[in-house]
Length: 198
Length: 170
Image 1 (cartoon, rainbow over the protein chains, first blue to last red):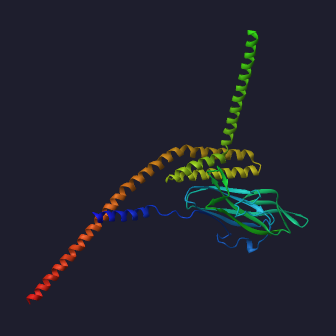
Image 2: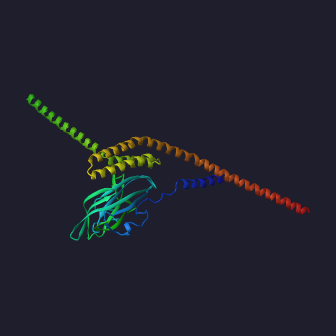
Image 3: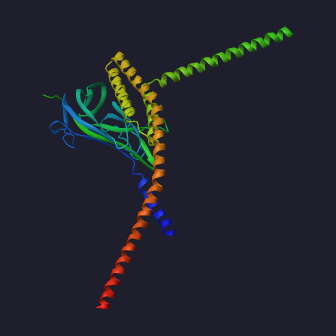
């Protein structure tokens, strides 16, 4: 009888362990890949000094390992070196307004890949500054004084990953767990030259 | 005096009716505004997402609804792009399409919720039934194994005794 009780306890413990594994770490991941789907060849001829009309092919990737269904938004911002980047410590996004955003609902363990094809359509010189005035992203055209940089150096695309927070009923850039703030973003720098690509 | 009082009370009643009327109109207006904002396709998409997330939280799944919602989100994105290009009519048509797709998702959610609940109950029952079965079976196998081993040892000992006795006789 005692044997049966011990055996029951042991097998029950094993069964419980198998049926209720410890929860895995929850995270989002985001990346940008180059023209061949690898972490290289981000610019045509590997030259970050881009000319007008030169097409750049990237692939954005987002991975959901939050253990639940997630509503994610990738906000793309165009910055220079002086505009603030997102702050990971405080979990605040960059103050620049997004140029374009991509939204999708991801199930747990799903990877989302989306093409990000872009080119500079026009640049205006003002003193020593080069102002990016026309840009095309995935055949969508953006006009206006998008961003300026001294001598056309150090422009950057910032990709921020936002998610829909059901408790606040709004999109959120960062999440806090046990006093640590997590946010996901990445950036790629480039320079622009006012010459037209041949 | 009575006529004066009557006139006063009539004026008060009229004022009260007017106030109530204005309050009712304001309420209706607010409802209308709320109704309009909830018709925004992005808001509708988030509503649908919240309900789908509930299904997934209760261990259910609805991949076909998630796929439909993603198509609607792509339509919203395309509408935004059209608006940027100045094609208001095209943008409105796409937004309408997105709204229809999300409404379809929203209408199919109760069925998916019901299915998720049924599947969850079935899973719980399976676990509840399978755990005692597995426990009883493993206990029986262990017990039978132990008995077999003991029987094997006994026969071995018996054989050894026969051999010993044979040797003693020789």
